[in-house]
Amino acid sequence: MKKQYLLLFLICTLFVSCEDLLEQIPQDTTSKSAVFSSEQGLELYSYSFYDILPSANNIHTCDAMSDYGARRDVPDFLKVGGYDPNTTCNTSASGYNLVALGPDWNWGWGELRNLNYFIVNCNDPNIPLATKQHYIGLAKFFRAFFYFEKVKRYGDVPWIGKPLDVEDPELFAARDSRTLVMDSVLADIDYACQHIKTISDGSRSLITKYVAYAFKARICLFEGTFRKYHTNLGLENTASAWLSQAETAAKMVMDESGFEIYNGAGTDLSYRELFISPAPVPDEIMLAVIMDEALAETHAANWYYTSATTGVRFSFIRTFINTYLNIDGTPYTNDPNYTTMEFQDEVKGRDKRLQQTIRLGDYSRTSGGVVLLTPPAFGYTYTGYMPIKWSLDDLNYDTRDLNINSVSIFRFGEVLLNYAEAKAELGTLTDADWAITVGALRDRAGITGGLDAKPTVIDPYLQSNYFPGISDPVILEIRRERGIELCFEGFRFYDVVRWKKSELMEMEWTGIYVPALDVPLDLNEDGVLDVAFYKVMPDPVIPGVTYINVSETIGGIPNGQRLSNDTYGEVTWLNNVPRVWEEKHYYYPIPEEHRLMNLNLEQNPGW
Image 1 (tube, one colour):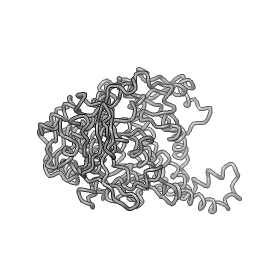
Image 2 (image 1 turned 180 degrees about the horizontal axis):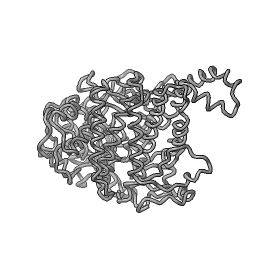
Image 3 (image 1 turned 60 degrees about the horizontal axis):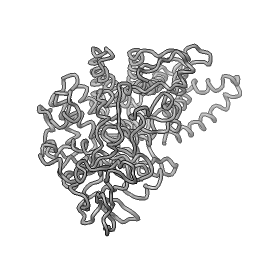
Image 4 (image 1 turned 90 degrees about the vertical axis):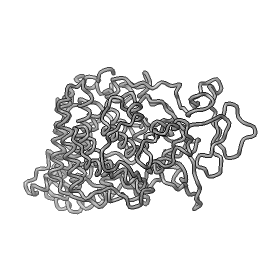
């Protein structure tokens, strides 16, 4: 990533500029003085903060456990007895290797000490106050980032606002209340918003004032809705204050930052271009993980989303695909025949983000310069709804971590949705607000109706399948929009958590409708048959067709891939393996090895 090489350059520069200092200052104080006595030193140190941000692979795989996706296996987190305080040190709910992600992804605190050390020592009187405040603002942005992730994961955590020594008793502190920690996070992000001097960054790899405001909106929306819907906390009377802060922060970005919805490639391509462009699309992307093939900075999205053996073989489920609107803005499920619509028909005339999110219709890939129409590959997908959002269309990128497309961390589209949701939850969203947020996003997606006025009618499919407790059509539609616009960007698990909609994680994994056994389907209507479902293998087989066994058992073992009506119906996957969300799953358990070292840490309920 670009910042790593900029950091190396700065290290070399600082080393040269400090050679004279090394001859004049006692050795035990040289390092600290050289860093904190100059703006160049502060800038150099500040680049170490960026290690807290997620990697490209962290982001594009972060929805591996979500309500709208089937996968190779049921996550341990959702298996009865499959996850406990002794397993969290090595794996996350999404199946990541936490060791590979770095020590602080789980319960580690090393990054926090780095930030606190900087904040305490950034006090040289010879450096202008505004400069010091700028760099302290950066440190506090990252401290807010660090603690926000901790609170999302564990709830109450110890708040530590200073660098601790080995013998400091606060190393063994108990967990502080959510209110204390989140008030401290809010104070940190407010300081960052007020004091970060950088207004824009052409590389889209550095924190700016408006990235800070975008992050504040994200934090406050999460906390406001979490408190509103998790009434067991007794904090619902404070939810509106947080939602108001989210609204104000998002509006600051909307009014002052200069970012806008990118639509430079038209409705057929603009949305996906945000996710496959090597350089961040500057109109909309605010902060990104940037790749550089020459420097071996690449990620593995193609490998993850096209390989039958790498990754979790994530596939969208039909219930979610049904939420994509028709191009005229009406619900697809208004059609009485939607339940038996075959794949090649159900994807027509829909929100154009659908064709930019999964393989369908005329989707094509290139191999050696040859363009190939490429239907969903049932050697990868379990449901037929195969993702393409982050993967490149050249097969050369499929073999390992070769992706050169940048991966966004903050983008303007999310800010618009945060603003709309905060105002909807407050009951203050106007038609004008709708038009510049959800309306603008749907306009980019080619949708023609319902762009200028907020909805007044509930979609019964969306309500009954996703949010039966919600009777406000505006909130329902914003949640629909958030799922579609932000899918695969790492938000869904914690959206489900903050809305307290745990039952969604138990949703049946469904796929395309299959009218009959032994009838090969042409999924993209190119005249070539693609897949057939059978219980007894046909003889002869048709070359090029993928045959899927949907018998009750295979070799005496229950078969995970079936049809909902046995010989026809929706493809189903792993109905034979229960997924169970208990109340305790709203928080992760504190790793037991850390509780053994610190007896003051109480475990989260149920773990």
